[in-house]
Length: 304
Image (cartoon, rainbow, N blue to C red; front, side):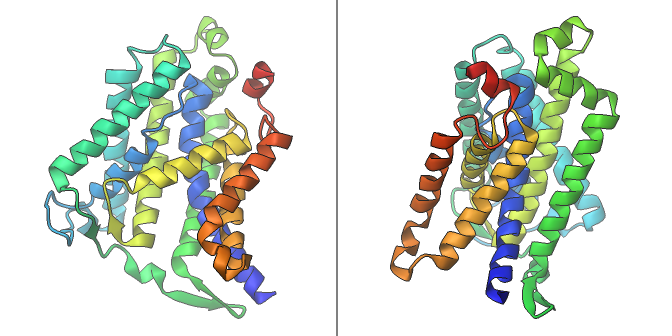
């Protein structure tokens, strides 16, 4: 039982990272029908913004050496500015384009960002000592839980609660929900589309910055492609949960996290190298029996 609880906490921590990343993708898809594959590069950017430009293997902290009171808002602001710039320069001119064109544009934005990181910081992975003390475990009821896992779970809960309040209690949030339901009708009713989409990109950037800080603290390694696997699993989470549903993105993120951790824990030793193959097989089974995802959305009903 104790082993199960230990694995459950590990799964909730991993699922929280996937859920935060999936929320950033799901939010833009809900408003703009944009599958933003550059989201992983926004995560990468948030991590690299902590250090000085250098080709050295060991990173030299700049913003990462500040007090967290100033560092966290600074990283969030940097990622938000880049996300808004991508919207203004790329996605806004393509606003009336079909979904596949927007998706290809997101690939292009990600490619530009990835190569910009390589030009500025070099292609070699870097080690960084960032909040490493959080990786030490604490004992709770016989369990040894890394403090970082508790921080990740708590941060996810706080950000999700804040996002819910933003969507339900603020003017921008209500307009964003209206745009997600029916964008054209919302425009006819006076919703300012440019501001709403800009707000969606800004919120997506804040979520990406949060994921970048938590993930870097967990791994201690910077790489120009570090956000790509997270974005891939986050995209899968949005599909499994239900495209266009923020609740579905969260449910899908935790479902993927649970599957990966428990497969790693309980598969026979000689099969653990194929953990991801088993996880994706479960994803295929879910989509066979629930093609619209675990949470039904207006978008899935339109496709049907």
